[in-house]
Amino acid sequence: MDDTDSFEDEVEEIDTKEMHGEGGYATEWMEQPKMKRMFQEIEHRLDGVLGKGQYEWVDRRVFDQVFDRSTLLAIYKLMRQGEVDTIEFPIASGKEAHVFYATSPNGPRAVKIFHTTNAVFKSLTKYIEGDPRFGGLSRRHRELVTIWVRKEHRNLKRLENCGLQVPAAYGVYRNVLVMEYLGTPQGPSPRIRDIQLENPESVFNELVDFMRVSWNVAEIVHADLSEYNVLWHDSEPWIIDVGQAVKTAHPNAQEFLIRDVRNVCRWANRLGVDAPFEETLLRVLED
Image (cartoon, one colour):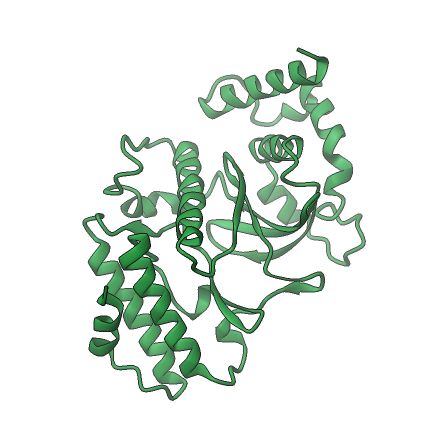
């Protein structure tokens, strides 16, 4: 084993202790020699989020809120694995996560960093409990976040394998998920709610097809589908934010499907599309 592997094992040990609440690392973690060495190794790759890069934005509060010790350890691991090279600037934010534009040896990436201290995840257990893929749910908050991130990664993989337009999922570690970036160097692709579509009926039909294939082939229901999590990319709708998606075997799957269909129909009707709920639901359920 070389020095690099040894150092990485030592950092992993610190991370494991932190995950299980061991040690007194709440405020003094950056003073530890191993952590200093780790941060010095990747600091230049975080110039963008530190406000030192080529992009004209800086918000120290974002860095302080998102890049805690556990997150920096996860990013370090993903950088070592070659999944990420640099992290540049935020492109989206929400209650559960921030998403950043990043670079990698294989092109641009979207790095989704889930908040490790946000209690909102405690209200999302209904999307995990009952999913046969995630038995033995832990009640520890940090471990719940890790389960949620793995769940989104698996859902993306499953949907992509069925030919559906979702971001490709790449690396995942702890609370950090690396995905395909949908957009240009200037910024991410817009949500369909934020633009004027030339043919909303065509987009509606594509969303119905997404729900139909997702339900019947991928055996997954999005559970939060609306115009807020559909991006307009390359003149096509792409579905994002699938962390809460559940298997059709989930006890609440049908309820979630009905809600998704209602949301899509309401959005389409507001744009003048004839989108009756009952007929649309039957189209989705067609095998």
